[in-house]
Image (tube, rainbow, N blue to C red):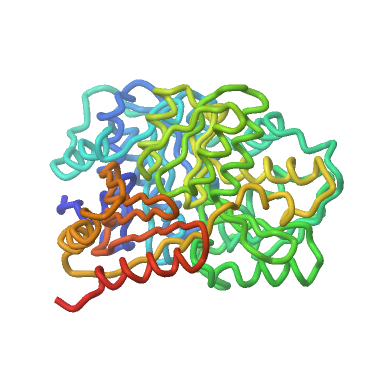
Length: 451
């Protein structure tokens, strides 16, 4: 087995098919996965997205897993959060074949322990890589079995029990599935409710013929924003390829920041659980911890990334967590992230009152943000050190929880080295646009200066 360091990332496996990730690699990872999670003689759930390579890779993974004596429940076409539902509902480890928002020639594997417990570089993924590279001998015990099970109806029913939308006012909703898995799950979850759904790109097509299924890129929100205005919808929802993230568009066709969604959902959870802890990563708006405190909650700041969020949720008992990238985590969903459940909370909040969404979120959007600005550099660590040196003697606070965060009275920024690419990721927030622009441009000049 070749060196897998290029495709085993911080949180999952991701690579080009078949050059980096093929069925032999998937089979080896399936065998190693069973060893690391201790699933011999037990059961593993496997799901896959709409990419042409996904069914074959999932079958190879299942072959490797059954070779180690594990039984495999194949849930078939699924969103990533549906796979997490399977893991939690059945209390078994799981593997989801998807490359999320990556282009069509990629695929990958997101893995979890029983109960949707996180697997990352520090929680088993490095061991899985090492075992897969060196090979895992098949035990003398009998091979496991493979069975198919459709969990989509149970997944939909579970979400609908968590957020009851039956009594809201009628809403008109544009949903852009991006030819991804939301085209499979949305009709099941949101049917029969007081919602008029205007579908965009619900046809499952892993070649992404209309636009990339990456709503973090504003270019991929053009169609949903236009459609919201054209049909006079109350809001729009845009999902990524595996539908674990959801971006929200207001009735004017303007994006609602994930930080505002985090604050909105946090308050709904605090209504049910007064005084509870709410997780926010260090790149979410400063407004989030402010609002949580104002409503009696306990904000908990953490690093970026699902394994860190899930670990902190378990440690603190937090009921909800949100990230700037539109990942939303719920204690009631095994602390896993689900874009669908977050979307349902937004629909419930909007439909419970008469104001348009743009007015509803005004109180949650207190500051001006740059969004994530990426810079490709040859030595990200050295450039980050240059930025630190430029700010260390100013009247600011510096911390290194995740990259470099510089915090002043009226602005802050975070600079992180990418886990997977030679990039520096910059996020800036300030009380006004002029300050944000000045800070952003100063830091970018330091990052991008000629050597």
